Image (cartoon, rainbow, N blue to C red; front, side, top):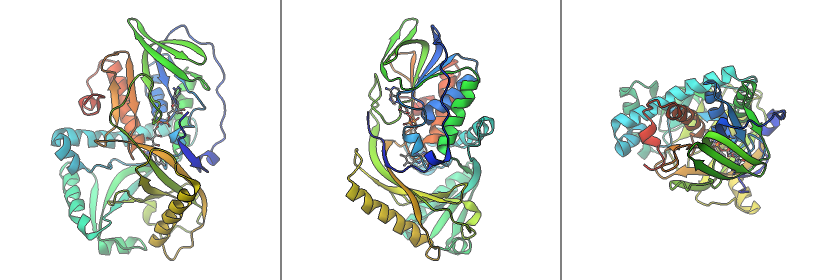
Length: 398
Ligand SMILES: Cc1cc2nc3c(=O)[nH]c(=O)nc-3n(C[C@H](O)[C@H](O)[C@H](O)COP(=O)(O)OP(=O)(O)OC[C@H]3O[C@@H](n4cnc5c(N)ncnc54)[C@H](O)[C@@H]3O)c2cc1C
């Protein structure tokens, strides 16, 4: 099994896991979801509202993949800025995609409200600052593009940033309508919702092969065969059964969680914070008053040695502390994780080009949860034969 992370994960400490009672396997399901991470969880939420019979098949425990390493920032702005995406795929499609990301925030809020446990979802603004003077022009261009297309955004100059935060930066845009979440609780909450609506769940069951046949699909696993009309593969960054996703690039990234900080009044409006530099430093607050921060991505495919990891964690802690020099910050958790990106910075979602009963939802990129949400609705629409504007933008062979 591919090693997805190392270290001590923070979100695992915020949840007591309950198992799922075994139910009898159905002869045939409408839908089989392979993988119980965020992508599988959100698919199960969306499809269980359509009265499909569903089975979720997970090789380990649900929510034990990259989802548990996720830092839980949910934003409509992406690693690729709107004005850059307009140059890449054209204005109409780029705006369409950004609007879907904005809508996904609302859809995620609906999941949070319907989940049978508190998933610590809070709407937030994001501060996206220019890391250098040279980046101010890019940020201004982004502000203009977002504003023109009706996205809620403000432009802040240096004085305005200094008036709200203890650090200074050349400029920033502030987007509204973003959110923070506890990603593990969101994932488990969405799965519990679908389970209560009748979805069967088979954990510790590894999928070995998926066969597309005339009357549906056969899923071969370490726990026997499952029959389903439609299969949705949501196996994350692990090698994907039956298909090579050509766009997939793996990296390693680092994250930390501080000890709780009693007085966070120095942090304006509990905003989420990130920057224009690549790789970027990003941060947010948690329900129990911690800072969760991440960054320092490296172009390597395997988790590094302990020595190298320690150097990176120290760098991350220094960068965070440098922003808040007056504030003593102690650290409780640190973890390093594999992270997947596509070369065009968009997720991969859609029907297999040759096997019409098999769909893929691979939530690549820093905004993976938003992508998993809009991808779940895209797959629902494809399965139901409805038109979805994201289909040509995100299809596997694009
Ligand atoms: C450090 C870090 C920080 C991040 N921060 C953010 C953030 O702030 N905001 C954000 O939106 N995104 C963030 N992401 C990205 C986000 O974590 C991913 O987009 C998300 O976890 C992907 O979910 P997934 O369900 O596709 O994959 P996973 O969570 O990995 O789930 C895939 C599941 O499939 C199972 N599986 C794999 N192969 C098989 C098989 N053959 N048979 C059965 N089961 C199988 C695995 O066991 C796993 O449980 C971050 C990622 C990392 C690593």
